[in-house]
Length: 471
Image 1 (tube, rainbow, N blue to C red):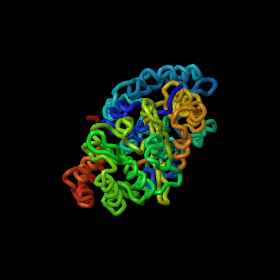
Image 2 (cartoon, rainbow, N blue to C red; image 1 turned 45 degrees about the vertical axis):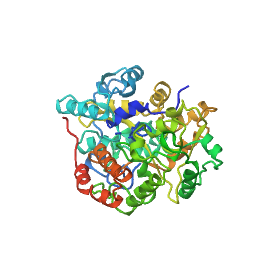
Image 3 (cartoon, helix red, strand yellow; image 1 turned 180 degrees about the vertical axis):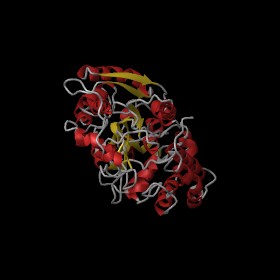
Image 4 (cartoon, rainbow, N blue to C red; image 1 turned 135 degrees about the vertical axis):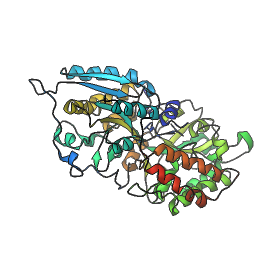
């Protein structure tokens, strides 16, 4: 039986190239303290796909040569990272596609086991005059590639294909692949972010278990009561808000406060405004009160590893629960607390087709197949992915009944209020720069939160306008 997951912690660390890049997330991929990841605010990259947004969105999709029954005849090049063994996962699925579409051949090209290296490989293929027709992509690099004009806008293809139904996919994951009003990709897998908690510690401390209507004051009171001891064996009520190289979990609380890393147009750094200052002061207070491990202690293991020691009461976690299968205690999940604005994070990985493809009708057929029921069922069963196809993803609720987490349905319900990060520029660099600076706040230097965040403005604004390069 396959646990709902995006990839292993080690794979996620590779994915983000950080040591994050989340998600992925996921998704996308998208690990517990790693990646990247699976929706956007109303912004230039996160608006609903609009056919009138650009000439490309309103033009008729290019037509490839067709055979007698109107099926495009073409030889396609498909490329993917080898992350998570995908060079072994894809070939049988691509064979299924060619058997169903005998006039289309697909050549798979695989390489690079990290997202940054994969992006470099993809850009080298483009600049070398041998672009793929369809390519795997993570949402942490999708907008940068879109800024370079790599992906084709799919809006017209989606509208033209009556057999393809975008509403079968989670809306937050679909938004994860939107750029300046264009649908530049389709999701493959996705994750939400929820609260994971140690039921045994709650029961031992006599603390009521988290509920769906928890406020942050309830969380704080529980964190205090769950904290005990000192030294290497200290038990913490909370952990996970501090990540090495990433800040995506803390961003959820910034969103709840009405803030973000960048403004709605994704052109200017805004984390140093009141919502950001409030949230990182709150996290620092958890640390200074001793309820949450400080940075130095957190580096001994990511939140999932630390949680699995049985010494942590609660952590935020994206919904890849394979991280906790070896836990020697009873655990479960719940919605994250909120004080009125319920929002959480999604991170995704998926597929795009290149604007440079000479066989776009055939490429679209492959795109629709990968995002359709056959492809998604395969990714769910053979790769163990939490796919973005709603009904297939939610089969896990029945399939995994009796296995932790008991409240697995919460992870899927959370997709209804999930949103992607407002990815722009060198997003991995933005995460890493902010996370590194915040170490000075939580650590022995005790730097002021506001001064630390404000001092990053110039550097982050430069990273916002950065574009990916082939080398």
